Amino acid sequence: MIQVTDKAVSQIHVLRSEENHAEDANVRVSVKGGGCSGLMYDLSFDTKVESSDQVFEDKGVKILVDKKSMLYLLGTTLDFSDGLNGKGFQFINPNASRTCGCGESFSV
View (cartoon, rainbow, N blue to C red):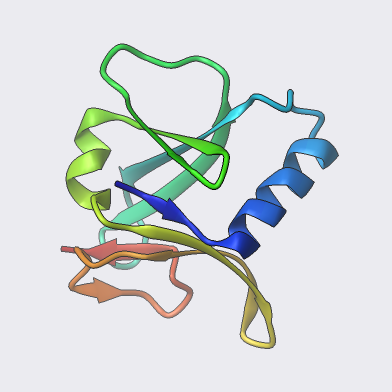
């Protein structure tokens, strides 16, 4: 399961509106190769649900995760920070053994 904090939910609603996505657009979370730690998180809006997607819902937000990414993301919490150390989505991932300074990449 993937959880979403209240701050992340609020920012998702803001971005849906700013980017003119439909109110029912889902959040796709995936993992791709790259970044300084080897793997990178990727977030996007998606209205298409693939047959191999895992679908989670938390606080009214539907999250789509492809089968390969699910191995890396199980138990992750999606948060949003707008503090002095930077602004953006953050992944609290219990599977990550190392993360980079910016929090956008990780390794297992």
